[in-house]
Length: 380
Image (cartoon, rainbow, N blue to C red; front, side, top):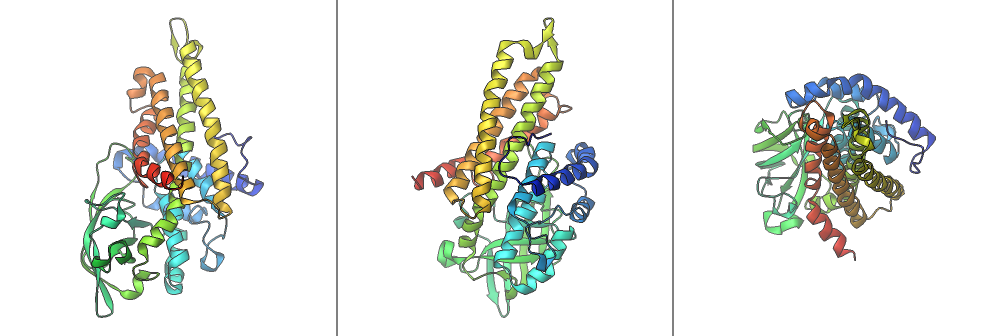
């Protein structure tokens, strides 16, 4: 269980909410993690249960059926999800997709889709990455070209979280291919539209319990009213929303790192070698002490970043620095903690193996850590 005694970003109301989240996860998430890992996705019914428990899109305004809360409530869910060792895509749904509709969607789309997102009736995804365009979003080739009152969408996307379950997808597409980044718009595509097709659930190194898919669009017709915000403004919108996405990644990384550390402490205090516990060896104690110090710094920094974001002050370079630092810490802690498990750490029956596998991708998605360094360097 995460220690909240030294946290500074949360109020008593946040702590009460966290208690509800923990009880829900203990009942509806943790018992199913191994099965979800084996089947390659969470149960579709989990979305409804999370919605009924108030765990989806808590920041959405009350006018659309939400709770109208601050991002700290999202962060509570993200921390508890990361600490549980789950990769369920509810953070992407609530922290990344929902804000696009809230900030840029039409009143019609807000009224139609936000209540379904809050209830879990409609899981969502955002389709940016393509086989030939990852961190460089300006290189996308998917198009949405006007034809009468419609857009006709053609192209393919890959590595899409929630791709198998999503009933609604935000698609980054070129509405004016000649204009580069200024020609990108965001188009809402309902999953039941003719020409929309889900590809395979991708076989990944980690994140086995999260559906990650290819998506294909072949002459998919959507009305022009399905565009989110202004035509050609999609790239600017994505850049504006990236700080919250990168903070979301940092939060999950820090929580997962803490869980890996806690698993290592527990294992080394129980495991014996040469007549004493593994914890009693100086190398073990010094390794854990070094990790504990870095985790302490990490939690203090995360609280700082959370407060900055809730106050509307977190800058893109600060969010990028947070994503960079916390995901690097996650990998260091997970790798060292697996090493302290010895051979047992390489066995999938131990949680540390899953935490280690899942940690590898966080330095890649949301913009690679090399891109994070580029963003930070530009602000120096």
